[in-house]
View (tube, rainbow, N blue to C red):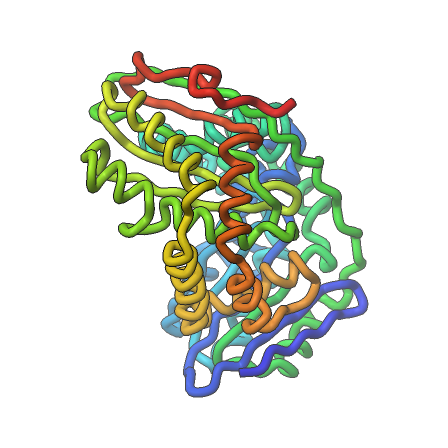
Length: 420
């Protein structure tokens, strides 16, 4: 398998990985524009724009966009995160050029019909309502807000309903003008792809566009504190986060190994101690998330309202204890899980295309798989214990609680603290 990279004169990057033996390919455009690129009055516009991309162009109606891909048995979709918006398709090898043409069309030639804006506005308001009715979804938005208060990184990707109700065509066009330049995009493909052909097509479709310059993020500032919303639910939902490293930080792999060992599977500390031995919850896990300049080590659990204090106490006990007795076997198991997840993901062209785009956005190069594996293997017990000690003793924390939480302790009562 061969990774090839080309940069057009206007900054658009094309990266491909040919996968012998496949008859299909995944291809997409990754745009460095997500929720944290929005100004306060724009909150929700990146996600709104993603929805509108499929609602018609100067040459295709919404139905024709769907038919163009589905008539050849393909699949097309998109997503918005806090740092990127992605538009992608999966098709057979002979239809790659068609997929690229459709993706370029929806990004370069949207019409933003007033009627379609109103239709999609209703869809997004329904999506917001669904999220608010899903406790184990909405609690992470509240956690993000208390971790990064009054800044773009802390705002919900969907945006508040009052903003969604106000957006008009000019708002969408302005965001495109600000953030959808060729030097803010990556065309990534994996599977049965011809790199030279893709570069020629990209040059024809995007080569005439002027570079716009990349936009700087508002620097993240971890705040911390707690947010609690009481409601008569069957379960209390608990989300606890500690400030962690960004994805360019040397400790990013340490935080990931630690998170897997702490709560990444059925053999992890939190699962064994809190679910298996104590029966305090059905679901408990930890995860390490990262952005360009910050990150979060997050723990989530759902439990009975009366069990929240004990669950939090035991969770903090496990964090403290792991700084002293995290074992070699636990670290080796976590490293094995990470490497297996990485290598299993490489069997999918969709996963490979996304990986290429994200690595290129982070590093402006594509590290070899062996380099990533070496960095995972370099995480030893001493580094994991030191990271655990930092989490237990120094890292500022954020806590979100939802449901029957009358007895839940505050951040201060737990001995945790906000950022200075």
